Image (cartoon, rainbow, N blue to C red; front, side, top):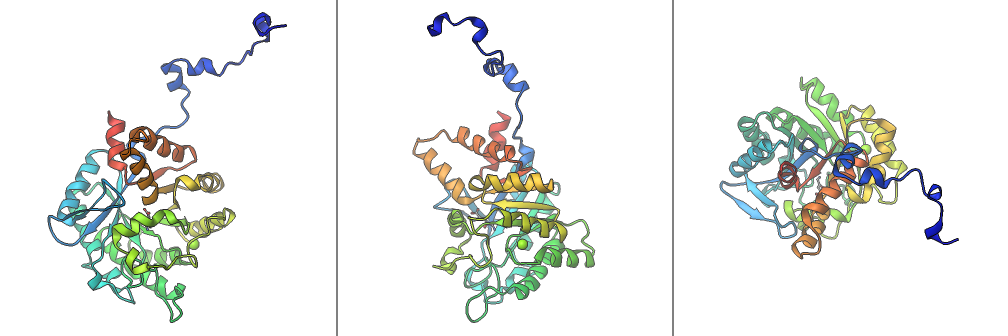
Length: 337
Ligand SMILES: NCC(=O)CCC(=O)O
Ligand SMILES: [Mg+2]
């Protein structure tokens, strides 16, 4: 019997294409959406005034001095973006082995927090708690004579750094260092100092990824790190169960939110963590992901808006409540079109 003469009843009763046929029914059955409320905008702050520097490996992203950053923060707020994540570009002259600039109450990050909070008080400010911008060797912690990053000594400095951020007015402190026990130590210190409303966003599952390359150019730590790596504290990309172990500890120690980083290559981890814990879960579309999408778009090989929205939607689908993305302002504008 030929296909053409097959009786109609042999055709499927369930035709998934019926619901895909028209825009109205596609909209009705849509399971996930991306809105400006999902976005966290990472920014780089620089010393000086009226300073604006491009980052070669991240076209479209700039390092800004505090005065210009305040204007950028206002724009982000007006676009409906709930929060920004601040990363200081530390001058070489204040980097040291003991990373003391990290907790300088008048350091660049601390001054930037005050200025933005003063100008745009309703915008959430997330600060990075880690020592890599402040160490001469570019590692996230203090090292011993063999170059090994020492855990407990580093945590003591991270606690002081987090307190200085809270004192400056940060709404959320975000330890990105991957030392053991730092969430508990920071939480205890914040409570003791009366900062009971300061939230902690734990970079719980931060992988030792090569997708961070452009970020290290942006903050100028690539030169300090040289041929070094972060394998003794960041997670092995081969591991998945270990991420659940990390998240369990950070939540038990008092994290309010957890993060997975990078994004696109780690969406299986996002899904597992969201399913297992149900806690507020964030994912970082890192600099290398941005660079890939931007480079292909600038070459005319990909449709930038379409692929960026698709990548971010996939992160929502994987279970993320929010996404750190260098595309945040573009995305907020595209979504408003
Ligand atoms: N602690 C923050 C980062 O390492 C950011 C990485 C990136 O965007 O590549
Ligand atoms: Mg941990």
